[in-house]
Amino acid sequence: TFEEAIEKRKKAKTALEVEISRIVTSEILTQREEKGTGYVTVRFVSEQCLVTRDSKGKVLEGDPDRFTEVTDIWTFARPLESSDPNWKLVATQVPEA
Image 1 (cartoon, helix red, strand yellow):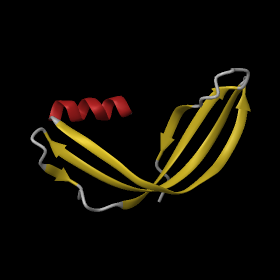
Image 2 (cartoon, helix red, strand yellow):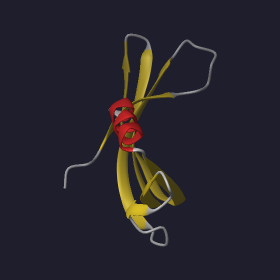
Image 3 (tube, rainbow, N blue to C red):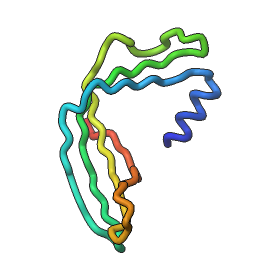
């Protein structure tokens, strides 16, 4: 999904700028283990400024001076036996309204 959105913007010669002012809250929604991999799903509420610009920098969408509250749900995974402490983002979703 991310790749499709990036390619669409490249073809349209636009760019999305995302500035995160702060994380308001983060909450673990679920955690599970499946076939030796740990999964954690987290809801993040943050203040973000989202602006789409054309190739000349003109604002097409959004307000560069306005931050809004955004809620995202991300799922992270990592092999539980791995010595690598890093978690990888494996899924994102927008909460239902």
